[in-house]
Each structure stands twice: as structure tokens, then as C-alpha cells.
Image (tube, rainbow, N blue to C red; front, side):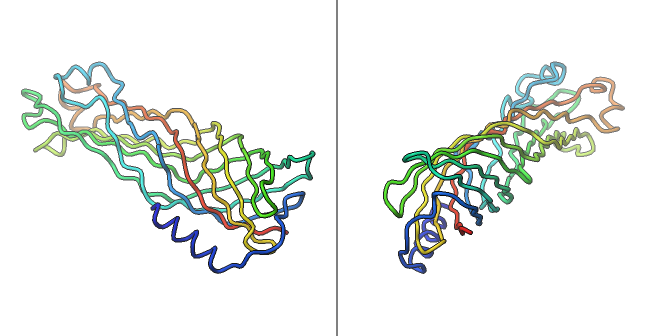
Amino acid sequence: MRRTLVAATAAIALYFSAGSALAKDGGLYGGVLIGSQIGTERNVDTIGTSAFNTLVPNSAPRQLKPKVEGVTYGGVLGLNFGSDGALVWGVEADVIGGGDFKSASFSGAPIPGLAPAGITTSATKEYSLRGSLRGRLGTSLTDEIFVYGTGGVAFAQVETKASVVANGAPTVAWNGTNEETLTGWTLGAGAEFQINDGIILRSEYLYTDLGDSTVTAAGNSTVRGIAALNGIDYVARTDYRGGEVRLGLLFTF
């Protein structure tokens, strides 16, 4: 992913020649973004129920770590309001999609009389549509380079899945999905580079904290029919927080 971002930056820089001063003193702008999540909290923790956790030691993991990878993409729209001395301030909104998420699994110890071959616990966490509404405050280093800090409110549609299957007896299973919209905060910094009149290349980093999501994997009818398992569910919790690096191509109006 990093090689892709570097190559994209180089291609854009070669295509456009250097131009006039950055249009930073006021006005509307918009553009497209590509990026990649980094340092994202990937842990899915087993938090209960206590009955499930005590079926047998080591039958379920305390923690799973699904992979988060792939390119993110989206759009941005903002408005700069004139400068106050050396500082420029404004507001900005973005909407982001994309990214690939892969499940993580753990095969635990046998449960005598119930799951002689053990059980496999799996979990997946996924961002769907997400975005933010932020303020910006920055200053020019040169006529072609502008740096800024940014922060505000963030939201995301997320989906957390968890499942448990008895090895060798796939009809004995627990499954659960929790889809919800989380709201939190985001904070970051970036730099913009004038590459032509009205065309700007952006590089930025944002850290976003959306809080937690909990999912309950309930036993199916086969599980409910086993007296020793009836009413015992698997519950997992995950954090939706982490960073994202982005490149943007912006156009001023």
C-alpha cells in the first residue's frame, strides 16, 4: 500500500508543473482521497458470557486479531475563511469507503462430552461508510506549501461478526452480527502542495476514536437442544479506533 501511495504521489507531481501561489486565503475546494489504515486497533476481545468462558479452560481465546488491509477512497469538500495574520482557518467534511477486512480464528481445547475435537471461534470487524466534519487551522511555509492541524466529529457504519463452531460437528454453532453507526472524534495534521493553478496535492494523517461495539453470538437450534449448552452464548467486544494516512488531489473554486 505504501508503494502505491508513493507511486501515485510521484505520478501526479510529474504530470503537473509548478504553478501560482496556494489559494489558501478563502474559498471553496473539493477533491478525491485515497489512503490506508495504519495502527488500527484490531483486537476482538472475548468478554463473556461467564458460562461460555468456563465451559473448559482454553476453549475460547481471550483475544482475536482480524486483519485490516486494502485501499480506502472517498471525497472531501471544504471551505477556507480568510486569514487571521499568518493563520488560515476553515471547515471540511469527508466521506470514505473501501478497505478489506479478513476474519481471525482460534481453535481451542476439546470440551469433553460436547466437542471432543474442540471449537473454532472466529471474528470479523468491518468499517462501511464513514466520514467526519472537522475544523482546520494552518499556515503557509512558502507560497506553495501549506501545513495544518484538524479535528472534529467522526462517524462510521460498522459491522462486527462472531461465530463459534464445534469441530467435527458443524451443526453445533453460535453466530452473531451487530451493525450500528458509531460516533466519536478525529484529530490529525497534514500538508498541501501547490502543483498547478487551482490544483493541490495533499498528504495527511488522521487518528479516529469511535468507541466500542459488542456482538453476541447466540446458539442455534442444535445448541439450544443440548441441555449443557442451552442459554450459553459467546460475547465479544472490539474497539473501532486507529489511524489512516491519505493522499488527496484537490481543486479550488
